[in-house]
Amino acid sequence: MASPTLITPNSKLTPLPSTKPKLPSAASTPPPQQRQQQPLRRQFLTLSATILSPLFLSPLTAPAFASDEEYVKDTEVVISKVRKTITMDKNDPSVASAVAELRDASNSWVAKYRREKALLGRASYRDIYSALNAVSGHYVSFGPTAPIPAKRKARILEEMDTAEKALSRGR
Image 1 (cartoon, one colour):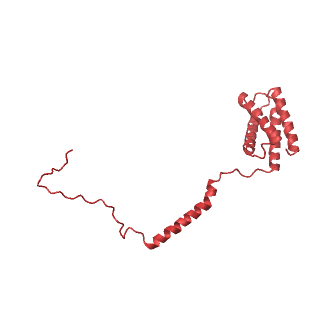
Image 2 (image 1 turned 180 degrees about the vertical axis):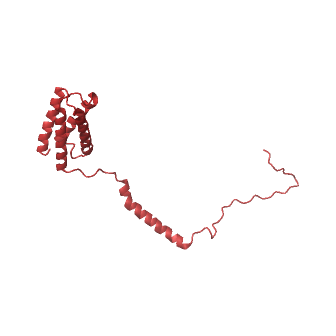
Image 3 (image 1 turned 120 degrees about the vertical axis):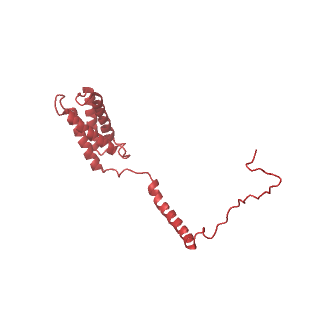
């Protein structure tokens, strides 16, 4: 491999500059006052991280569970809307608006109470959820003006009756 400079017998070799690391000079060291602030800053950051980390690392929880009175009231409203909507005559001009209103009410009821662990085992919740699922599934599949078949209507009304009985018993 050829070097860019020619070495001849007459030329003198020059030593390469040393690659030793430079020692820190007095200008690069922080003043004593700054050296004292660094541990204080570290202590502050450590303390604040210790205090705030549980807040950031804990899972976000939903707001506290609604009271039993509120659950009973909301469930009774949904039951009355379901009964009113599925017993309407198919030629009634307000069927489509009643179905849209029922869909909004059922969606908000399900969204509000679906994640409540205390309610998932209740008979009233199970029956209402099943009935709402059947009603909304029918209207999604067949449209808001399609009448509910007699068998399905009977099952939905039966679930509403059992849910009302369970609500009155506190279940």
